Amino acid sequence: MAKRDYYEVLGVDRNADKDTLKKAYRKLAMQFHPDRNHGNAEAELKFKELNEAYDVLKDDEKKAAYDRFGHAAFEGGGPRPGGAGGFEGFSGGFADIFEEMFGDFMGGGGRRGASPGRGSDLRYNMTVSLEDAFNGKQAEIRVPTSVTCDVCDGAGAEKGSKPIPCPTCGGRGKTRTQQGFFTIERTCAACGGVGQVIENPCKACNGAGRQRKEKTLSVNIPAGVEDGTRIRLQGEGEAGMRGAPPGDLYLFLNIQPHPIFQREGADIYCRVPLEMVTASLGGAIEVPTIEGKRAKVSVPAGTQTGRQFRLRGKGMSVLRSPSRGDMYVEVAVETPVNLTDRQRELLEEFQKDSGVEKTSPQSHGFFDKVKELWEDLRD
Image 1 (cartoon, one colour):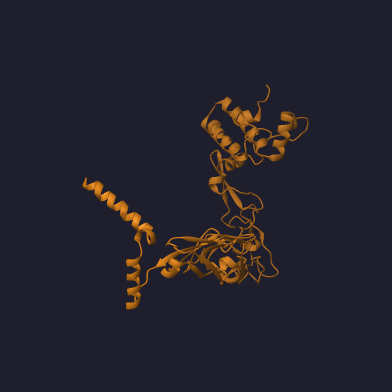
Image 2 (tube, helix red, strand yellow):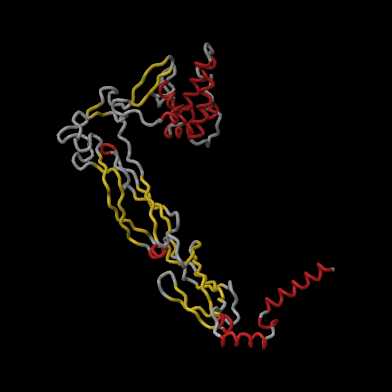
């Protein structure tokens, strides 16, 4: 009887990725599992066929050979998929099938020669001023963390002694127990999955290979960072157990609100009060810039509140770029207060001598529309 195409067995197309293959296998393995099909010879054959197909397609080298030569890749002395019979569809027997099906839910991972866990990643929240976000800065931070023990150099054992293979699991890091048809694999309780135990633990770190300390780091904050920018410092997280690799440190930046400038991306906005006389007659004003300098803005006669003036290239720095954003200056015409008698007299003369429709066209037009609205309502 000719063998079926392995992709057909799993019910997937030839471009299926590993996740799709695994999902298809899990679904069919549960369907045709012998425990669910007692005495069903056809289900048993399909289960073996399913294991054989998945054993090939989940392995990159076997899959490449199968895609090129088909079943012939494993004939004539070539590497054969699966074992010699029974339920050896995987090299480790049914326990490996169980791990393949449920490994994601039970921790999964390597089985033999397990190594201590990698150190945890750390998060550090840092607040910087808008000026520092513009210029960039070199900052020094202090981070409480776990560092490699300087007495045992992270080994966890006293000087002159070494860890030995765990006698409980034989150095595998896992133990197996038989429960009916299933073989259940668990992390070794004696060594914690490391596969080794320490007879003479280091007194400074109690065999952990690391100690709690506060670490001082110099951090480069590049120009142009924004609120929420994340900076990764590789290897600056917690030290790993017994010489395992350290984790990473992630800096999350928060930009402090500024009393004058508001930022939107690479552009900044500034609201500036404008004297009534300057707004009426025109002139020039000076405004501050984010780099701590001054810029001159020409104000035309008749400028109204809300008008914006754009200063090109005076905005924020752009991360990893030489360019800069723009600065927008919005003016707010200020009404004079605390007038002297002479100033009040001059304003009253101005009001008498000027035609409202010429000097205040917006007000004149608005109230004309209001009068028309009132007349329409009376009608």
